[in-house]
Image: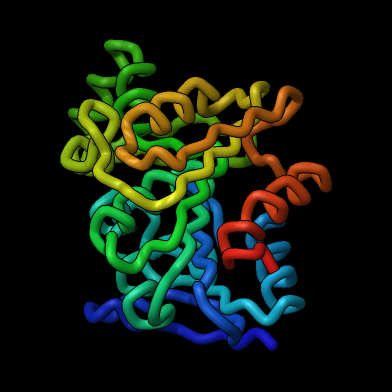
Length: 251
């Protein structure tokens, strides 16, 4: 049985969450940029965990999905705080973090903040540092000028309406860059990435594996996989990757 609710961040902004009760470790799903907890991967994991009696938590960052707040007010710092608030208040004990795209970056940041609680981490098209390497560095000189002068830039999206990239998002992201130095994580790390991902290069997962200190790091490449990795076979791969991380015998 899954329960739903809202969590006050402490500043009046409420985060929407859904939780499955069960045994630990708790699987915590962190969605991507402009995504939410109702996507195929999140809902599949909720059903999977409910079937096996595994605790699971999914939630929306502020400015996303059913949560309060404005998307344009979001930064990596703010969404990291959202993740830590949800983890600290809604997922006691050991946890397995599953982060998709931006959620992979936030999962790494959360794991660094709570290393004693992390049983394992799975990244799905994980995108650490994307505000710098995939946004700022991809902008033209003119686009950078608009962003710096106006405080935001509207960027076309193949997934829907154009979305705002703010100066605050770019500048704050620089305080959380990970790939320019070793990432001191000792837990098992699994990185699933589609080789036809048009948004986040699959080589980024190789870079993450190089930088984490854990020797138990694996990169799983899906030759025909896109960015979302939500096809039935992709979801089955996620289940098969997660299962052994939930217990010694994988049951």
